[in-house]
Image (cartoon, rainbow, N blue to C red; front, side, top):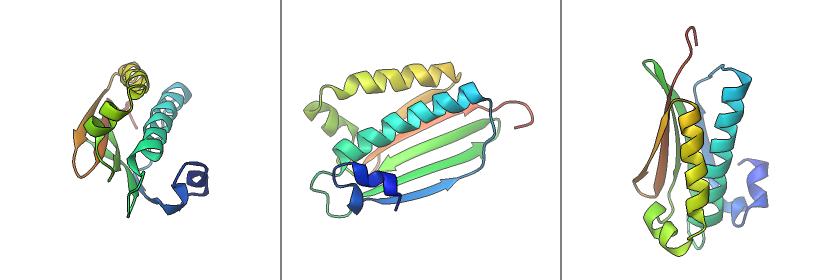
Length: 127
């Protein structure tokens, strides 16, 4: 478990799994990715695991042809249920969408045994 997760409510109970293929990129792109990941992980830690008996957060990053796909998946109640009870979450997701556009990418949200955010963006020549 990541020690940093302990600063969040219920963070000490969350199982965090990562499987990330190394990705080398320009600093500007890296900082944009960091902001996106921070917002999505923070949302999951704040809203997904309240009263959850077995909280789990999975972060994966893989190359898919000429694109890189970063997925953040929690096993909480899902985005639609959370958005209805947390109206302030819309601004953070608006920022995430804007940041994804800065990467010339796109982000989509799916309900799959929790909330899954899938960010896809093109990789630079020579990776």
